Length: 218
Image (cartoon, rainbow, N blue to C red; front, side, top):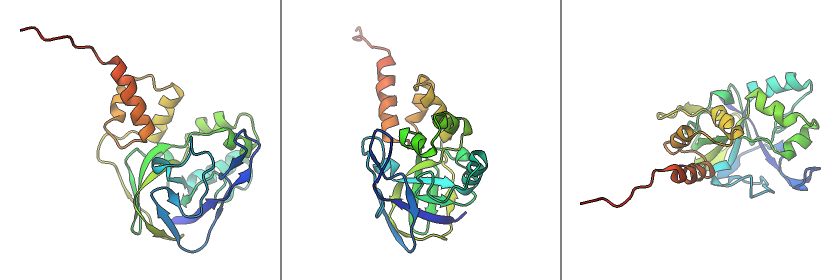
């Protein structure tokens, strides 16, 4: 695999309720600094739902982009899905929480799937866009940055599979759509380096279902 292109976004108007978005990302040339909160020059407008250390970088694979291009019947340039890195030969359906991608001295760790929002639907221009995104099971992936340095388009990407319980990101999406109602899945979440919001939710819900223990008799 290699990095086909690197994208960052500036604030732009959107018909979605947020008003402004950094979703419309464009390729940049030359080295780009990448840190714990993402790429230098990239903009996150909705900080409550996007960005942060566990959503620092959004990855999308070229096979998924090409599939979507056929599905939507139009040209989809790099950055169309709001991705920071477009990577050759990367199939997001195969990614699991904890998988690592190494690009030079940069190391990224997969944390979660992308969840489509109103800005995405407005960008596509189809009221069924969000449902279509879920059905496609090609969501791209968010990652945290474990090692920081500059990256450049064209660099090779080394993939390292997580060596624990493999929770595929599309599996996480399915449980999201079921409102995370499966305690067995939530227990698994706590064994992997998942997004901190999902780990917090899992801890909260499992603690509510934990059996209460009374005083021990002597």
